[in-house]
Amino acid sequence: MDTLPAPKGDILKALSPHPEADNWDNPRFRWKYDLLYKNEWFFVGPWFTGIQARLTLRANLISVSELSVFSGKNFFHPAVFESAIADVLNCLYGHHKFNTQKKAHFRGPLNWRVQSISNSIKAVVCDIHTVGRSSKEDPELKRKVYIPVTSSHFLLLTINFGGTKVYSDDVCAKPLFNLCNSIIDSIRLDVGPETQAEWDKVKATCPDLSVTETFGELQWPLAPEKPPKETREVDITPQSAGFEKLRSF
Image: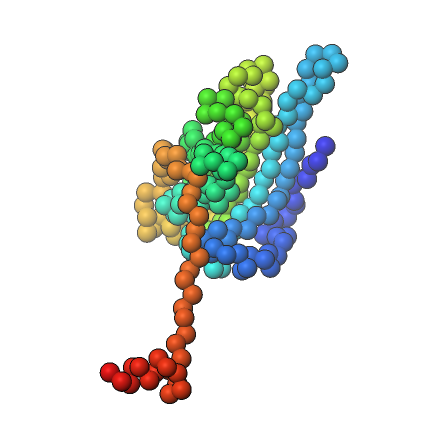
């Protein structure tokens, strides 16, 4: 079983450097992911049938590159937080197509809801459906939990149902949902004084810090991003034909 225990102490001091971040082509997609925790649970069937399903939990701390459009933005502001979630989802899932067709390989966010985890900071829970190998009516499921933990970082929990068809295989899906719901419902965030002070600063300028209760499905697949046009340098020395033509006017 491939697991990773949760780190101890200040996790921000243990983050890995990301020297490759500034080499990405699109600055809006420059999100940095640090895996903090991973665990798996296996579900076995009757005698001699072996493993029938599994649930995987991954926790990543997400931060933003200095060259991103989100650099300097505060994730405690609900509009910034919601936009950041959408951008991360677009980055992870928005450009995937099923085979070479125009059909999106994923759908999301679905079943968006706000989860109370503290008196101030709230989490967002939503689903991603994998429909490329199945259909909209019988998808595979990943459940996401987004939690802003500092003004420039948020935690992403991804709960993967391991390919179980959640709508057509009730026998396997039911215990997976029970464990998934138990994990999410048990999440509590102990907000320290420094974090609370950062949250209070945002509240002073934006009294309504409630996260939206509804969020529409993103339109995937996204059109490819066109690279910025290169600026052509013009030779304006007297020896250039172009310069002579300009002088002739």
